Length: 145
View 1 (tube, helix red, strand yellow):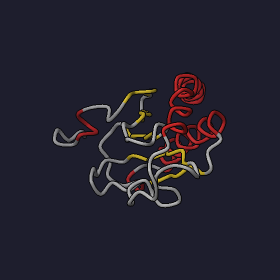
View 2 (cartoon, one colour):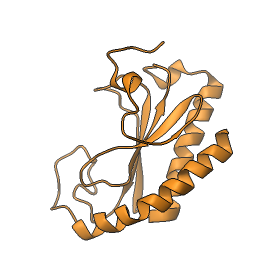
View 3 (cartoon, one colour):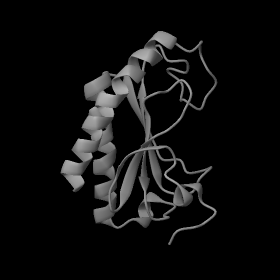
View 4 (cartoon, helix red, strand yellow):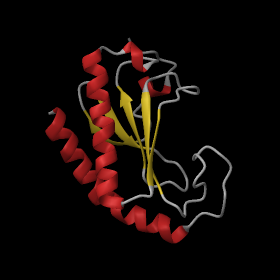
């Protein structure tokens, strides 16, 4: 059941890339991190263990798909995966392409910045987003219909 006070029940939560029957993938508007995506379960579920085994497999297949496309298009230093839910207790996975030169690397994106933002690196990533998202949408549609 959806919860009207939940921001992820009320709206997409970012730029919608793809929506299926059970989940959606969005690009988050996170300054300094142009390749920051979320896989969001459509129904209001707070914890991963609240899903059936089949739904858990479905969700993680989507997370893996996002990771694969990010790696193919951007060749990041690392992909960060996180499912915190402390601020918004609605099941969602963060899938974040990280680069050695980003402002927070190697710390988490939520930690204090380690250096100034790299405008050249961010522009390079941003220029690749349209092709990345076209491939991501197509890959998700092929896997999940």
